Amino acid sequence: MTSESVADMTGLEKSADSDNSATAVNQLSKSVDVLKTLMDTVQQQVLGRDDVIELTIIALVADGHILLEDFPGSGKTTLAKALGEAITDPRFPSERQQASSEESIVPFRRIQFTPDLLPSDITGVPIFDSNSNAFHFRHGPLFAHVVLADEINRTSPKVQSAMLEAMGEKQVTVDNTTYFLDELFFVIATQNPLDLVGTYPLPTPQLDRFLFKITMEHIDREAELEVLDTYKSRRDQLGKHKTVTREQVLAARAQIDADVVISSTVKTALVDISRNLRQDDRVLQGNSTRSMVLMLPALQVSAALRSRNFVSAEDIELLLPRVLGHRIELAPGVSDMARVLADNMREPMEQLAKGTLS
Image: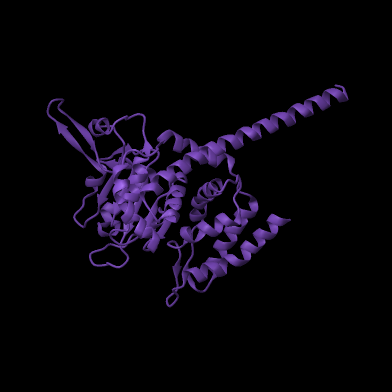
């Protein structure tokens, strides 16, 4: 082979690499556009909650779930319903078809958890059909794209166990038969931190299933005024907002996972932060390795939303307190979680910055 032939082949390889890179960037950009459309649609209906909406979208695409600590009337139902209805499913083109189909996955369901709730109330139950002389499974409210689990800490451990299986495995088991939930299954759970009467604290394994725990504060004055000024127009626009399809969201999830790079320096920083926390005398119990694994896709989504194809320190600083805040148990007498996290993040983040610059 002549030197000219080698040069020609090298040029072709570089051209192919360039074309592949451009195609990947274009596909990633399209995926981000899908997420931004979804975010804009929810923001038009939920005012003053842009930070919570962004974290919710990140958790959805990262295949996680979120736990909201809130107060009545904070907008959690509006948020969950807006998100669910912004995702359409071509398999069921109308709500009427969804409601009548035994196999349907509806956009949104709300479950009000109470002490007398039974597992079958959320999973579904076999119903005997006298015409066919056979049992048919009637799907429960867990069979939805987005499920609002309201006051989840008010239900019994038996129901919480059923939720644990659904959130962790995307399936429910009824009478020794397993039924699979939708691939997009996403839980927004709430609990009232001020009212502890008649509650059952969530077990550690179930808390670990939530990617983020978010404490919702009251919206600011300007946003509250806007809510009052625009509530009629927003009500009239219900069902008229832009939507994205279930397939688009799942495709965006796969595209971001494939194209957004997590460097070894980022992974090193995460491991060092975790080890620092476990060795801190102010921490009674540190976070698990699984929490870091669950955080990786969330970091990728955060980077993509900021028009980057790589994870940076900015993404860690945004998400790590949300991921670890409910997974770390502080020692008696210690209450400042933010300070503990900041102290243990400082050195690994400095090393990450040096590694990025070098």
